[in-house]
Length: 358
Image (cartoon, rainbow, N blue to C red):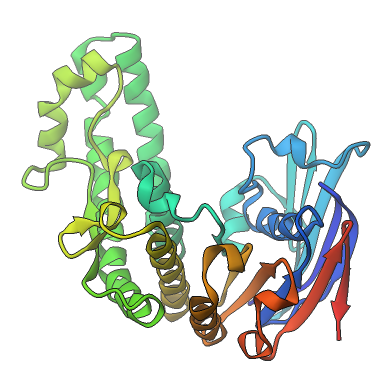
């Protein structure tokens, strides 16, 4: 599975762009503000229906236009599958295989997209919600029972939190405990299985990319390890009532990258953090392929800002060896040598116009 064509209309400074990417590596050169990051953002939007640069999706619509469109064709065993996302300033519409769909999860399943960008190190430095989002992307794609359980858990959590906010009696709050416990068991087990498989993959990629040894993933489920979740909910009842929300559970989980027994964010340099995150995403793409037999889509924005020349060569070598389709941006051809690029389709973007370089 991979994109065999992409069309973009009125997305930021990209008025009308059509191209056919390589199923392997694609490199996009362009100066700052030329549209190269917007091109990656549009492809990301096609798989996520959101941006990696802003929470205000309406701002993606080009000035003077009523709506944006990003559409493409995916290769599949049975042929090709069209998919597209339209966004007006009020709503988002998604179509897959010619059918309108309302769930963004269906889009994510059809086009699994991951991203490496200049702020990737924040995955290690910032709050656990960022790492949960990263973790759950992988679990969603390889553990079929995870997403229904996650939806079930979220519904029950909303009801329990509403009861806490309204200061309802204890029995109204605890009425949702069993539903949370049953869904949490599936979520927690799926996450732990995934982390157990992802950790060795990441360690192997890290050694090849960054030569950092002793890297491991540490998962925390969101409540004390030695206590069953149902008991943890009961023990947190007073704290929950004071806080007016549920303070324990899978929605509080975290997965940390450790070097030895210390969190990587407090032990390695900013540059090494970027390498660790790059290795983590490469490992996730490999695990996705091993688990599903499918290929993910990896977007790498401004590679030269992420890595020095030696690590760019290493990263590109690993990227070219992955069973994945990739898009890599750089400011100019000097950022990547011919050996770095290898057999890739190369494009240049300027003033929002894209052309293939021969």
